[in-house]
Length: 148
Image 1 (cartoon, rainbow, N blue to C red):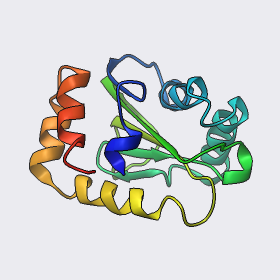
Image 2: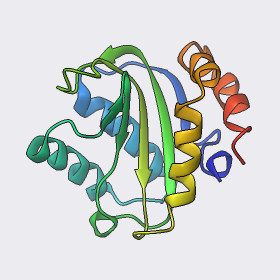
Image 3: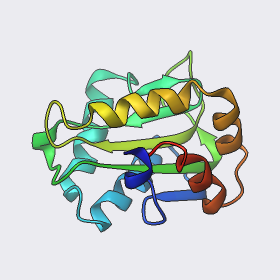
């Protein structure tokens, strides 16, 4: 499932962002372009971060940006952006962030399999090392293919 969502249209490597808002926009815009989420979804993610704090920073250097399904999700989707230079999200434990996953969940349940696979990826130190050190989109997608 993860490899079906993360493909050449939704994975970017070497993206330069000045701050966390640009990082959120970079990942979310890939989903807007694919017509998986509406533009307002980006604003909802940013608003959630401003209201609730940096809870989306789920591990050292990794954010899982998301908002509620009713905030503009059209279909289950995910993007992955690897930043050239990490940015600060305000999470003292896990900042700075280099990897931005953006999740668009259509409802309360359809994304659970994707999250389970994402957890598998995040807990696989070797695969995460490969992703962190990737120099190309192809290198990242080769790792993701292991999570069908």
